[in-house]
Image (cartoon, rainbow, N blue to C red; front, side, top):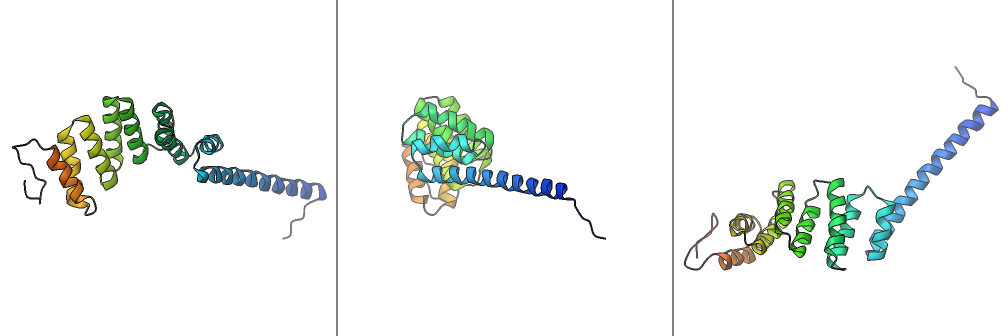
Length: 185
């Protein structure tokens, strides 16, 4: 069975395909523009990227890191980190960045909350564990620091020596502390 369209129906169908192609091209151009701007990695370009791709958590995190480390704007960074963690609550790097921003602002309670989120979403990621251990030192929470740093000593051969040294520097003199599988000093 063969189906034939009239001239009017053929034109409407063709116009529909053209419109669909234009819409797809528009989305593609928007995405390409955002990617190009974010790749430049300058604060001005990142500020232009986020409005183009407002639902992209990675761009928000990148903007937050730029604000925190290049512009030393912890409050501005927190705004962007909050948006990144709203869009992707499983992004440990955004939670860790949030903790660093709170550290910079001197808000220890919020820093600990952000750290707990980072560790909850990436409990086995050694980079997160190492950074959390270092932040716990700054907070003066040596028990939490020991738990994190011992994990690094046991599982990260690259950072093991530095982690072991940190542990022993932070252990009160006169007492001995060792991670499982390590000799106490």
